[in-house]
Amino acid sequence: MAPKKIGAGKGDSSILAKISNYDIVSQGRRAACDAVYVSKKLLKSTGKAAWIAGTTFLILAVPLILELEQDHRLGEIDFEQASLLGTPPVGAML
Image (cartoon, rainbow, N blue to C red; front, side):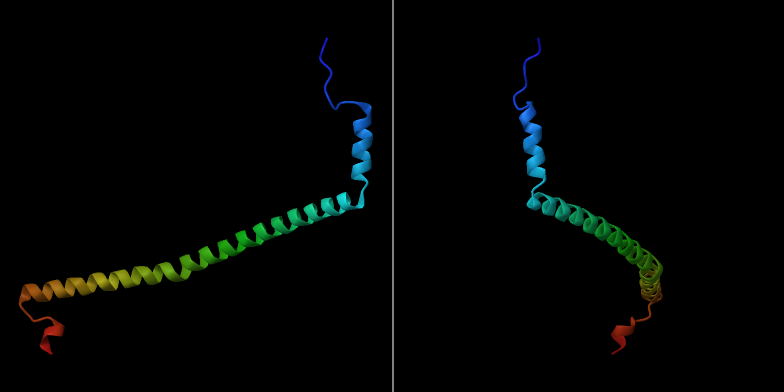
């Protein structure tokens, strides 16, 4: 014989029904649903904003960074060639 569960009686469902009919419970449920709705909208818009920011960074900033790095490398090569050929660096002529 299975043991009888505590709280599984007939009176519990009527208590739950009474509690769920309270105005404060329905307001709390409505507030929770509204919070979930706002959270979903916020996550969706945040994801869109992150995608836009990431794409903009890839289109605008990455080529700029690559160009600056290439310019820096060319400057180093010019300085190295100038030092090998014996010409004074540009800053030393002052």
